Length: 182
Image (cartoon, rainbow, N blue to C red; front, side, top):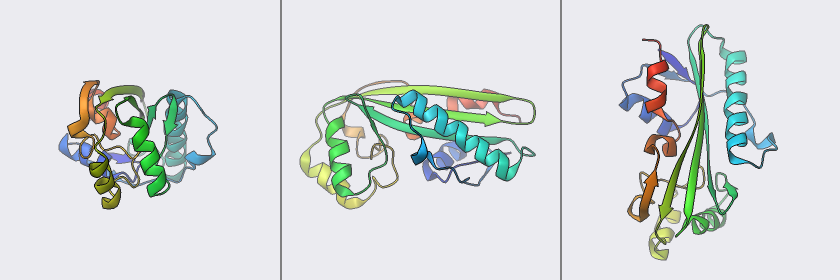
């Protein structure tokens, strides 16, 4: 059993699919206050900040898991889109481009800590503008790093991928499982 210190439905689904027994309890951490321009530094500090917040709020009686994910294209960190126009801008940067999805996760119990920073790189074909507009109108992009859904909208445009899809979805479960206390 562990506590997932995240409100992400996608991270919860990844753990469920892997058969991990967990309870979801998001912890308060303001990642917007981070002043990090390097994607790997940003996700590391965000995941560690979330862990510190969860540990302070919940203790370590039950192991904790936190994570953060960012999308990058053309050297820019693409955060969660603020509105439809921002989602369009962010997705157009990824269209026909190399896009990295960077996830850092932190697992902590009373006697061990595991930190993983993984990158999955995608090369996308250019997005069809009509498909992009339907995706924007659907609202599925809301709350997603880089407005990106490799398991949804972006899937037909994937030309090449290097890395774990779970990393791109927000939790590199393949690397986590060996560290869990069962």
